[in-house]
Image (tube, rainbow, N blue to C red; front, side, top):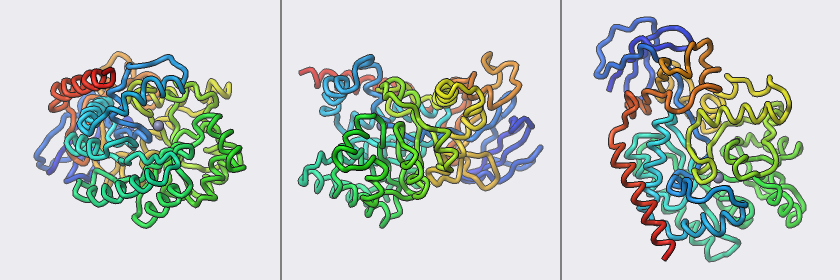
Length: 421
Ligand SMILES: [Zn+2]
């Protein structure tokens, strides 16, 4: 497969980009080589497609089902009630809808944690996007449940090898308050032995930190260090309440931390992600949307804006987290966090890229691309999306779009019916 993008703006200069297989092979002012697919880049800017560092894809089914409630009540009375009735088919449709939404807003990689791994993996496989997918591991400190979860993860890891290289099987111990110490140790060992990423929630709420101190005598990052879980393969999500000492611990173990500004604000987790402290310590940070029940969309351009504004507002300093730096959290920094050869438009990188339609009113007059993308754009400014060298969207049309919308809608309303019986 070869593809030639003609005359797109790359960092302010018009370039041709030649893609062979799934890699960017050449970038020049003018490339005159035959290609199977020609894409016109006129009036468009080429950017690395976006990386969503933390989500629960199939929660798209719960979008708008329950909002504006206290966190615990919301979970117990609404979210968990529906989740208990979900099937693999529901997850498949929810994840398909998530993949569609991500493609339409310029994202080609997401880091997922949810039930029914296969449903999400099938959706990713079919839509052509890339993902690190974990089967959420929760044992509620019950040995029987723990044994079940370990066996399931071992089986899924084996099965994951049948899927394409776009799908990365990942360990997903949910959090320290839902997974026993013994299971955390098992997950850490299994991830290390098999060279897998490990995806966990950490320090999202003050209660989590206080309970951890009460039960273990130390804060969450210190506890996870003692358990032996921390390492460069660990993707720690939220980190809202991290202390100075914990930031040092995460840095020492090269743990990657994912900020989810919209979800944090909507669920009112209280604290604010200590971005400047993490940056100063040299911790790799990137951005995520979190699930659609706490966001309520998967638009990474919106998340980039929220991240930047939240830091500025919190620190009373408009120079904090400037446009380019915020944009890179969702591209180059995200790729670094997940060990992906993408997040930049360069020869030798994966052809995971997007074309931005510069003829949009909100991108006019267009003085500065990073300013426009961070503060002015939203996902609907994305015109074309390419992942692994294949076109997933062109002229804002995605193949099979209507069928996905119908299927997901049906799955969501059926689920509601089953849950209210
Ligand atoms: Zn989450």
